[in-house]
Image (cartoon, rainbow, N blue to C red; front, side, top):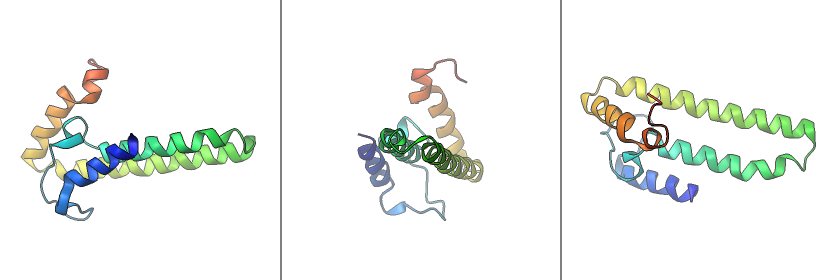
Length: 114
């Protein structure tokens, strides 16, 4: 399911997909529920793939794997925040960000999270 969300998120970008340029704000597909569905689904799937193997490798390797996964998650978190900082100058993104904060998946799960 998470791989499907990641794929759907990537397809929603279409030919505009680029990490280096701002080619418009995507508000359809899974982006109507989250500003970063590709990052979230990719990172969650890695955890779900990795966690079953953590207990079979012993305490120290499991701990190192856990730290490595947290480091990868941190990279994606910083990347998402950096993208948001750059996009803050676009009024369309500001409107979209505000809408997702009020109506997105997190707002539905935790209504008072804001």
